[in-house]
Length: 278
Image (cartoon, rainbow, N blue to C red):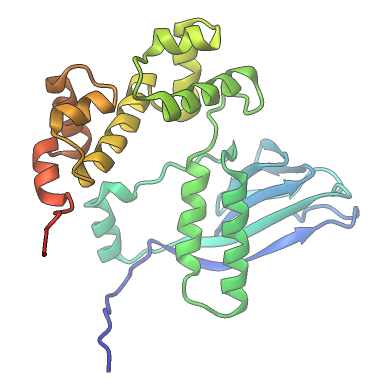
């Protein structure tokens, strides 16, 4: 008989239920005051709601979080093409779980009430998996809810237009960083390649990806360096040169800052040993 690993998992949320609403072009959202939170994600059309004195027009690709104890109601007849997912949930009030969460800030989520979701395919997949798990009576509903809330947290900032030229420029810069990180590359070089102002490029890149061009470049180079170190490809100086670092000491500082370990120590711990057994 094989062994199994068993351990308890305490989720900070509790799911009530969820579903997919498909409009027939008639009716309006009911007026009600829930005792739970409700997460809504619009797939098609526009859903117009009012929570207390605030109006929300939730368009395709946007999410809305409704709070318990607040009255909300529909403002218009449902669009004929309206389609949205909904999910009701509560927060666990167990004192022990709350205390463990406070001691672990890595699970802190700052969820905007109304936002444009950045990765539509991922959030759609998670909602489909949630409904599948609900249908079969599974016990992973809270896990899918947390993943959904995490995706909402990754929403576009309010001052960024997802289809605007700035975002397109930022994605082009990221593509260059991904493919040409080993070349002499910085904000000035990227701006020249993309025929734009370096300050503007840096600003739209940070708004789009929540990191600077330099941070993105360092992250890409260190990721490549990890692979070379694991493959035992040359010494640390060789790896630095192959990943675009001209200064070995600077490479060591950046590597340690991102991974908490020096390249040499990383190589010693993790690289594959090539042993001749002949």
